[in-house]
Every structure is written in C-alpha cells, then in structure tokens.
Length: 236
Image 1 (tube, rainbow, N blue to C red):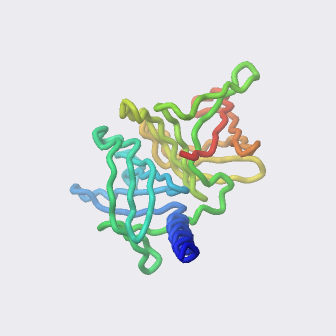
Image 2 (cartoon, rainbow, N blue to C red):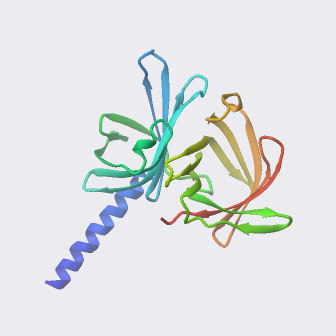
C-alpha cells in the first residue's frame, strides 16, 4: 500500500513538473484595444516564474507589465504577482485560471497565446536576479533575498528586465525585446522600454560568460557607461 501511494505521489509530481516545463519559453498574443490599436502581449515563462509585457505593436510604446511566480496543476494555472506597473494593489494577489493546449496554442482563461520559442536556442534561458557589480576591479555582492529586486527573465529568444520592490509594491521600470547569444556575445534588440520609448529599435551588444552558474555581463550601457554585472539564477 505504501509503495502504491508513493508511486502515485511520484507520478503526480512528475506530471506537475512536466506541465510547468511545457509552459517554459515565450508566448505572444495580439489584441485590439478599445481605440482599435493593436496591442502586443509577450509572456516569458521560466521554471516557476513569469513576466507579461504589453505594448503597442506598431511602435513599441509601453503600456504595462506584470509578473511573479506561478505553478500549474491539473489544468489550472495559479500565479502570485510580485509586480504590476498599472496597479500596485495587485502585488501579492494570487489568481487561478484554467489552461489547455489546443492546436499548438496555449489557452489561458479567454486569452489565446502562440508559442514564440520553447526556451531555446539562447544560452541564458532562466529567471535571473542581479547579485553583484564590479567596482574598482572587485565584484561587490548583493543580497538577492531582500524586497528590492531587479529580475531579468529570458526564454530562448526573448528577454525582459524588471526593477521592483515586493514590500513597498513599487515598480521602478522595465524593458525587453529579443536577444541572441553567440561567441561570447549577448545582443539585445529593444522592443519596449518603460522609461524612454525612443530607445525602441536600438541594439546593444555585451560580453557574457557563465561562471559557477552565475552570468557575468559586461560592456557599455545605453548611456555609454561601462558596466560589469553578475546575475544569479533565481531559486525562490
């Protein structure tokens, strides 16, 4: 009997993990708003974390973003928001929606998403938190367990960074788009930027290296300032 129960538990856990992995990657949907403007929605899902950004499809004008942690089980998707640019009162709330896969598309509630990628081919798929910066030749570590977070979440082709505070519910900014990794170079192509819509369409190239599981990111910022950042994969 104990063996039977253990088998059921293992099957349940395996199915739950499989469902979460099926969601990994980037998804997109396009809907027209009340003014008839086409709005692009992009969701990036990675191992229990997600972000969703929406912006005008034609010009990348930023509209809003939300995201946090999630779990999936028995056809239900449950998420808890860590940030919501358009309504800070939503931070900390938990919501559940039914989801299913039909004809290669993801149906969540009344929204239908098309898959952009499954977490490949980029080398940096994951949810990362900034954990250090180099100053005067030395990497100064940062506590990633605090309420103020800068998260960068990547699928195989899409990225989004978000700065926020889960304690004060403040949203400080976000940007995202597409990226590539090749020969030690990480290149971002900006698709939206909450602080400055004029940056849409720009490309930035950085050096990247994975050391002991951390992502070392160096080069020059959009303002031409030298940067050296260390990012650690998010575990909780």
